[in-house]
Length: 283
Ligand code: SF4
Image (tube, rainbow, N blue to C red; front, side, top):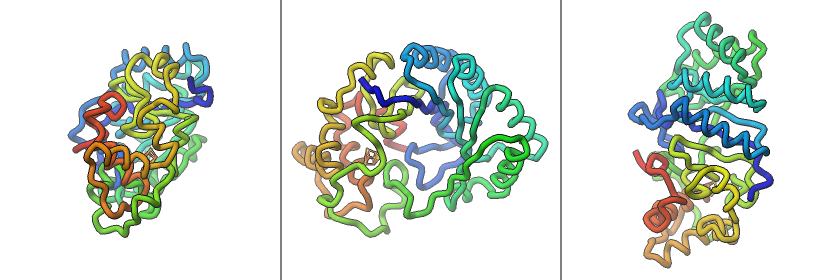
């Protein structure tokens, strides 16, 4: 059971208009795995039946790439009394009028807040002027926003960041990473849900297979084979677990996520339902 759980982020699609070097879900225009409207209905009904979730968020990938499903998600979530927010990279913004029209439609569907990603990596794919324009349009419409800007210091070196950005970074020995610095793995407040039905504690680390209610009811951090070592000794403990099975620990890793991700990649064949899906682990 997870009494602390009140939020679910819907990964509406793994596809994205951008392909940022620091993306930890490997978002890309080449990705096609996405939720259907029917799936959204089913997932939201499961969430309502849990009777503990208050907040949902449309996430990705880039949710606006599947605009009709995203709009449907907002409408259904609102009918069910859930508070709904979303994240975007603003790549879809073409003009002030078009952005204002979409924001009005989304707000009337129930959108309560919009996070807008922009940083040096996003700006290689999305002109910052689109972000600035969208922020202005949202302010005029009265929609709450958050401008989300990562710096190199804020990058978590998992997913594509582990492949593209880690090579030239300073490292520390594996023994220094004795806790997960970002997620409350023992008592999560929110999880991510993807089109395969996986509930992610961290991207690529799942509660396990089965319908949502079963996966949540079954979850025990003290017996989950990946969460337990992470809670007991952080990524270093997970690296040692992997090393017992043949994983070669490197002399150094950039951060805790870098070691965790490398160990999880190695352990995937043994835990295919807990370290999934493929989208979280490769191009
Ligand atoms: S990759 Fe590992 S260390 Fe990083 S946030 Fe996720 S679970 Fe925690």
